[in-house]
Image 1 (spheres, rainbow, N blue to C red):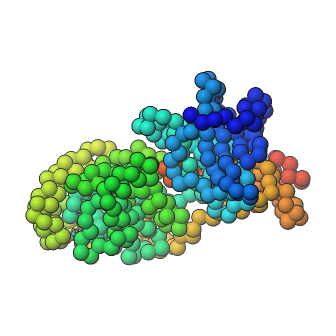
Image 2 (cartoon, rainbow, N blue to C red; image 1 turned 90 degrees about the vertical axis):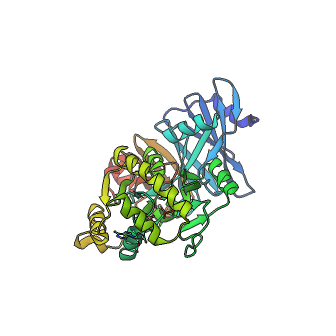
Length: 401
Ligand SMILES: Nc1nc2c(ncn2[C@@H]2O[C@H](COP(=O)(O)OP(=O)(O)O)[C@@H](O)[C@H]2O)c(=O)[nH]1
Ligand SMILES: Nc1ncnc2c1ncn2[C@@H]1O[C@H](COP(=O)(O)OP(=O)(O)O)[C@@H](O)[C@H]1O
C-alpha cells in the first residue's frame, strides 16, 4: 500500500463538474466510481514518468497496481479524461506525434480478466493510433499441413502488405531458422518471466514446448501499416479470439492424415519421436479446428497453388487492387502547449499556439466514438481533425479539415 501524497488528498476533497481530471504539480488525478487514479511522477526537473497509484475512497487505502502493457515514455506534462468509466485517455504534452495519445485501461475486459488472474489491482497501458489497420490474419493447422509455405508465398507476393508476427518459443532452432526472423528462440525461464509480466498476447504449450505471441510482435508489424499474420496453434487462436485483437481466423486442413505424415517426413526437420508426437496432436487439432467455432474459414491444402489462390481470395487479394501499397498509419501532431476538455464522444484539445491561431485552426478534436482494440496492443480508430473555434464555435466540429 502506498503513502498518500498530501496534495492529492486535497484534490480528492474537491469535485469538478463535467471534466473529471485535475492536475497539480507533476501528477494528474482522475476519479472513476470509488477509485481515484493518480498518474505521473517526477523524473527530473523537466520530465515526468508515468507511474500509477490508486486511492480507494471506499476503504481509504492507497494501492500500487500491477501495470501491464508497454509503458509510455517520460513527458513534459499530462492531461487526462476518463472514457466510458473503463479507461483514461492521456494526452502527453511535448511528445512526438505518434506518441502523444495513450489509454490507461482500468476496467476493460482485459483488465478485469487480469485482476482475476493476479488477484490484485491491475491497470494496462495501450497506445492510441489514428485510423484502422486491416484485421490481423491468424493461421492455424496441424504441423506439416503447409501453413509456413502458404505464409511465405503471401509475404513474397505482397511484401509491402503483410508482416509476420515473430513468436517466441522454447524449442531449439532448425538448421535454416534464424533467431528474430522465424522465431525469437528463448530460454524457458526468461519466457516464463515475460509471461508473468504480461508481455504476451497469448501463449500455449505445443508439442512439449512453450510458444507465444508477444504484444510487441504484433505491434511492430501493425505500426508499419502492414497486415499482421500470426502462425499459431488452436489454443493460441482461442486466446486471440477472446482478446481485443480483432482478427480473421483461418484453419488449414490436410487432404488426409497419410498425406500429412508424408509431408512431415519429407520436410526432414523432426526426429521420429517428434514426428509421432506431432501426428498424435494433429488428430486433436483437426477436431478442434473444425468444430470449435473459432475459425471463420477452413481451407484444404491439397494442391498448393489452388489452396494459395483460395487464401488470396478470402483475403480480398485476387483483384486488380491487390498490389496497392499501404501507407503507415499517421500520428497526431499536438503542440506542447494545450488544454483538454470533453464533450460527449469528442475530446477537445485547445492549442494556444500562434501558428495554429494564424491558420484559424486552434482546436483539435479527437473523436473517440469508434475506438477498436486496446490492451494488450494499440487502441485504434481515433479520428482527429482541427476546427476553427472562433468562426465555427463547437458546432464546427462536424467539419473535418
Ligand atoms: N499458441 C501459439 N502457437 C504457436 C506460436 N508460434 C507457433 N505456434 C504453433 O506451434 C506449432 C509448432 O510450430 P513449429 O515448431 O514451428 O512446427 P511446425 O508447425 O511443424 O512448423 C504450430 O502449430 C504453430 O502454429 C505462438 O506464438 N503461439
Ligand atoms: N499442398 C502441398 N502439397 C505437397 N507438399 C506441400 C504442400 N504444402 C506444403 N507442402 C510441403 O509440406 C512440408 C510442410 O509444410 P510447412 O509449410 O512446413 O508446414 P507447417 O508450417 O504447417 O508445419 C514442406 O516440406 C512443404 O514444402
